Image (cartoon, rainbow, N blue to C red; front, side, top):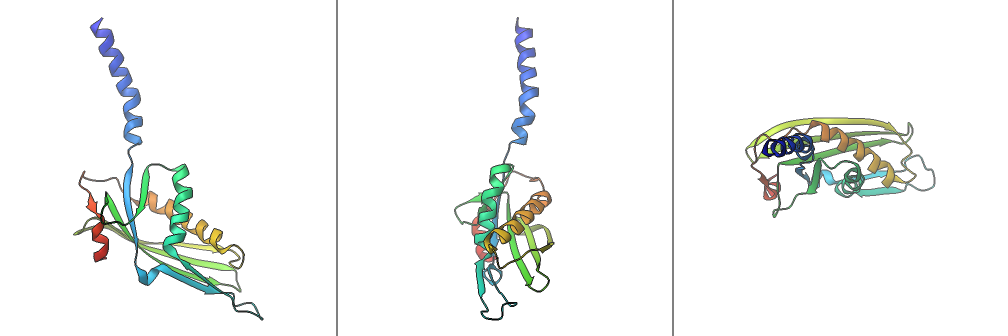
Amino acid sequence: MNASIVFFLLVINFIFMPSLIASEELDVQYFFDDRYNYYSDSDRVSFRVNKRFFYKHSDIFRNALLVYRKSHQQIKYEDCDSNKYSHYIIKLEPNFFYNPLMKTMYAELKFNIYEEPSNQIKQGTLSIQKIQYLQVRQDIQLTNLYKEFIKQLSDIIPKPSSESKINGSFCSLL
């Protein structure tokens, strides 16, 4: 009888343990430097009115995260906060340029991933070139760009090498 109980527990362990390991959430805090946070562009094609668009990248990124969280639970992105600890901190430096004549958005997102204040584990640039008409529903179009960036970032972020976590107060030094 004991052998069958042990066997049953082992079977349950092998069935449910991989799903528990896969469901572990990776905590990531993101940080936008104020120099790169503000985005403005204009409707330069218009002859009567030169209408300007103003956005904060951090707000657009936050909106894109709401959609991302509904379908992906393995990485939890949060805004930098000195009261929080996470596996990584990502510094983001966006650079967007819209060409209204070609209806093309050129978007670059430079990133630096930190595991500890003294340990930058990865850096790089993600690029997207997308044809879009920015004069109509800019918020949705920019959110879609950030959803693509979040998918790319999620593929780049490595598994944590240790259980130690970095404090969000490090963002004030960035």
